[in-house]
Length: 281
Image (cartoon, rainbow, N blue to C red; front, side, top):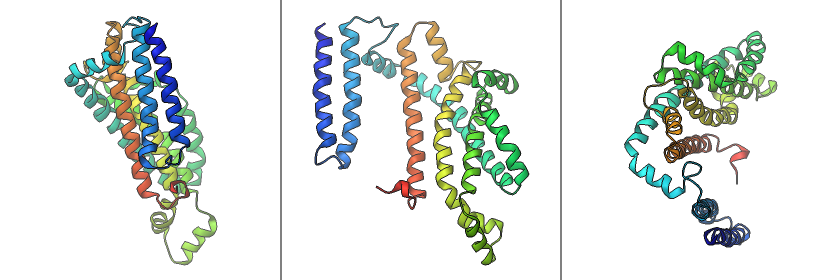
């Protein structure tokens, strides 16, 4: 029980430190703003390590962070292959195709009131379909390689993007559109110079939502059939072999990949929509 007590004491000390940093005079400095979540995360990892060893938790139930880190270090080639198969080939390609298709359809729907009124309710219905039901069908249609995973991702990201882009294109007022017409601006000129910039916060909102959906869709699709590579395949087979450290290693890689992808999209959003009130600090 000594390690468990040490974990509780450590948690209390670091909690007090984090509270003082968060409420201190230097709370708004970049180093402090970055240090608070880092300390919080390290606290959780250290407590996890101490409690697992202190309570003798079996590795098949919950491996310690040190075991997961050792597994990552010894399985880098496998993890890299799984990352390329699942994230680059499946998730990223499906994300690009789905977002591009949603943008094209949103432009068409924007020019047709009938299509906009008819397509969006159907899109909401299809978006509500469970991925565990549609993924096996798409895997059967497109085969077991990465193309079927990309198809699942396209279905998952298409409608959130379509709804956000369509809503963003309606953001400008009728008076602003009339003003553009008085300046002899056509549809495409008004779209690129006024309506699309106004829609950017909505578009990036959809891109950020889709960035997390894409990786989830690719991993779930691999549970229903894949070649002997990929995060979903590795997780399903490792669970059967009771290699929980490998499962957690794949989870860590997926979490880091998804977080970095989301962060990159958020950074691009900050550069593109620097004028929007949400980007002011």
